[in-house]
Image (cartoon, rainbow, N blue to C red; front, side):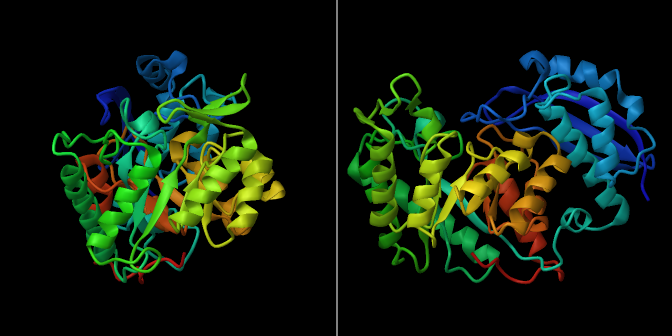
Length: 412
């Protein structure tokens, strides 16, 4: 088996121009694996801490002082690599070494092992033998923490081409909706600047309902029927609206506030009116009972926890017990290491919680999460629609479609 022979870290920059860490892992003195840690704008309070004292330079210093602990380990032995990480940092949130280092070291190691074995990465870490393509789902219109003032309070309106038969068809349909939505926005507002948010979704000056209406219009202009060829999703990112002192959701851009009961009705009305297939974080990150109520109302919709479950197996168990979601986001850097994330995925799958492997708003051009989505049996891959750092993941799916091991699209 390939063994780690060297590790090197460096400071680089993500898609928002913020500093992050990139790690090279070489196994058997020749097989280079590389991973760059992403970062989020809408961040759950229970996520792994990205950097030591919030400084990537300090995280690299800790890694450099402990590189010998990894030398000689098998590059695909995530358990041993995890144990080495935990000898350096036993904190619950990776505050000593930084979750970004845990992310990059573990993914770069497996990337190196895959090259040494001449196998696709998804096979090296797979939790299933029935490999399917997750449906790409991407942000077509952004607001909230991903876009500027004047945009909707809702953070993301997403499209998923549920009627596509192949991954290429799915990508092309999503691209067509994004492009047509741009046309709709320019006709509606000749002064629209073509502005886009962090993840490539259009960022118009528009309230929540109008944003949803124009997204529907773009789909219909292309001859698509909602729920048949394509479906919309919404990331409410409700923790960004929740005011714990007021005990209300404050929609400052739209100019209204919701009690917890009103928030449930607000999200439910959007799910019903726009025939959503996907609804993420419809209430704030600690509102397990409220999420349970929404999940019970919509058993056929992916009622998804992100800030609610933060790729944490322990918190997911709580959500499962309370029936707070039927789907969950998998973001490796929320958990810290790939080992942690795969533990989370195993708990989800055993309990029939559908997985959505996701990018972050601050991304790199790495493609490995496409493999992670396949390896974990994820139903969707949330990686955006346009932008080089988003398209990198989609292009990797296209390459993998040439692989004999993969057979069609996932069953949502």
